[in-house]
Amino acid sequence: MQFASIRIVTADVDRLARFYEELTGVPAVRPAPVFAQFEVGGGTLAIGAVETVAMLGEAAPRPASNDSVIVEFQVDDVDAEFSRLQPEDVVLPPTTMPWGNRSTLFRDPDGNLVNLFTRPTP
Image (cartoon, rainbow, N blue to C red; front, top):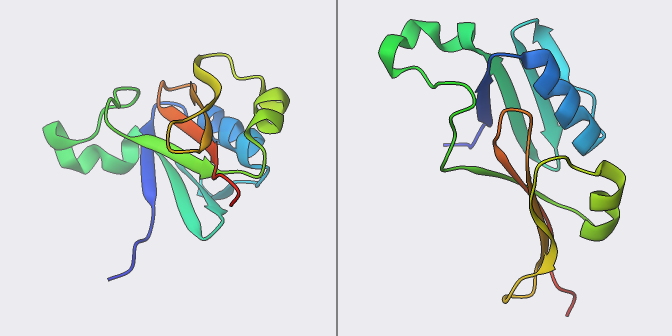
């Protein structure tokens, strides 16, 4: 088995793709208007329109309703990234966590939590 990706289902693929393009500095691969994906540091973040899961009926994920997943990116300098991005919906400003990571959390345009973190140097 090989891990493939995490997919965020959204009502606005273009808006979310622009957000993650700015965040990651990586252009989205757009094989179709209803889908975007980012290959970042060995992992894949996918963004799909509601239409991509419509066949699931009532079991389909609902856009902008995530309360259990945090999209995380390891960065070289949390404070520099926070300053560059100037996120609008900040949940936690750059903070040194009790276990040593420097971290900031904010929400993407759909309300999903995004964590940027730097591991402590030995």
